[in-house]
Length: 259
Image (cartoon, rainbow, N blue to C red; front, side):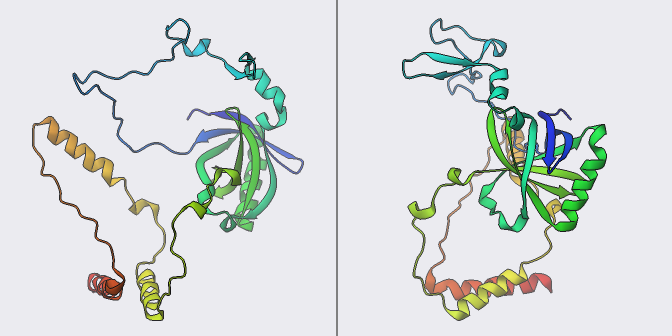
């Protein structure tokens, strides 16, 4: 597994040299963009604005545009000079209960792998996180961007999960959300009963990306020239007057399945 960042975890005076590895792989199908007319592949290229010629990745650098339209060109070394510590250190500043972090803040998970010299300290931090049920809150710089993250123990690894800063989350005030709606006691009781009946221990193995599998079946059928029937799907809204009947039917359906 190829690492995408190398540095160290820092908490207190303890430093643990680590590498960051991506913890996810896409399960979606690799679909190409095609021209509708002749199905030719659409290619995106990096073009020099003045010459119109394509530019190779190794010849591309980054720059900041000043008010006089001149660019200040930045090198990889410049990004490190801006804050050398944050470009090489995942600094844990606080430990919190993971439940306190709302799901809207979560972004991308990564695995942390220790260097040989840091295995003991890595194991110590992992066991301490697991024993206290805490998550470490840290900041560091990756891909020229400051990242806020949490570190938690997961099985035999420490997982780093990038989380968003508060200013990156949009306010809900622009949404049209229900307010001052009176919920009847029997409605709430029935909804709670349905939730309790459908509750169980979370097991990620029982959830699969079925859509990609179904899409692959469709692709194979089209390749063979098979014409598929178009499904008639209609979204039915639950009306207030029908809510209790729908909840009762849902509970009864669950009871029938269990018997």
